[in-house]
Length: 122
Length: 496
Image (cartoon, rainbow over all chains, first blue to last red; front, side):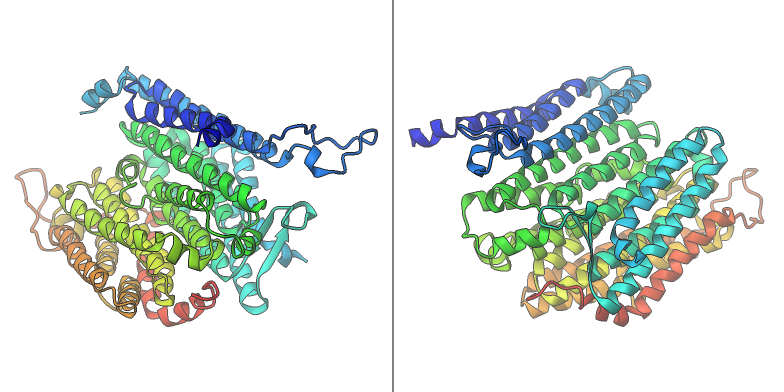
């Protein structure tokens, strides 16, 4: 049991970050804080992928004629990293759209605090 | 030569059009609308020719950049994706024609961005349909999602708040899908749908597979607003501009239902989703709860667009019900309901837009007989699609419910047959509430405010014609449903 927990510590941290993000999105009252929590949630998934690609005693996946890496066990898996580059771009775009919407909300209602916002929307 | 490129041409057309609309729109605003129509017409033409091609000579595979799958990304046009892509492009084209006057009226300053974003939305939706790669699906989900947040946000005063909520929930959905995909990728080492499906048939069931599957299904469930994950939908569809909700409601969440069908029935092993992880049964119960909840909530609404949004929650339940039945009849019902509901909901949202255009509101309380005299064709379109929503033959809505009920009878799931019949009754209640006001309630003449004779005052032809075409389609789809069903049977995954 202990070994299971310690052996996968990176994944446990990812899970903690994921739950932290979800908690923030649900419980925080301020819309900016909700957005920060959303970014934390996305970061946790990015870290999950990157963790899954790492290996002990493995090198970077670059084709180099002086160090021919023929054994795949000695090379980190590059695919999760490239996937996460795309996911990071998506998360940046989402944050950008979210900020644009938040600016619009602030201009119309002069607040970003959710209970206050609901009051002013009536 | 060009026929092999059909799968990739559909989303690329929209992406290129979006680029040119924004580019040329800087100099001349009037150029945005014709460009959008041109792009969508071309995409519709391509997807229809793809549909013909697929039926005559089989599935078309396109390898992006010449990389052979499973290493490269593959776009696939099989009977199912060709059909849904044509529906998306067709509905998109009619709604865009409609949007000309509506956008000018509601969003005069945002014509160029609106059409640019509408093109990106269609690019995302058609991309979801044609892609054969699970990660590429995620990217297209986000493209369509980001553009729908923007479309919602330009609406009424409260629209940005609804859009922000939609953004948070939508991002959770997409992130869950990505996390689930991570588990599936680690397990199979592949992202290609066909390849993953092949590997999963020999993978023993383990916690990682179950976690991945559940996360992916929950993620897509959030996106398609499956009860109880529908919270974002009513606000988003109510406050979006008329043209925006008319393009989002008919095809927006249907495409995610398609993605769910793709992943549940084509990627996962069929023993896995029936025996090991009873996800189809869960889907059945959630969908029927959604049907009842959506219909009851729709009855309580006083705003036409909000009522239609809640009815969307109910209608997505029918599609979920069809998937959950897990038999041929259920599959037919689900796919038939995707196209039927797309046309019905498009008609209804266009009518709501017409009302807002002419009388400035769409609140049910204030409708009366003057509407019928002022806008006879709009009212007729509403009546036809309302009858179809209730499920009166020979309108389209009857036939999808018919197949869903047959599916329930075949599996002896009587409780779901009862739900389908009961929901027809509930639909009748809330649609007759509007129809009664439109047709039977005499106009409350106030002295001096209304003249005795009411002149016919229809919306402009660019709005009226798409509304009428959709209404005619509702009847036509019902009349030719035998042909559609015969075609749908060729789409079903093997062993259904």
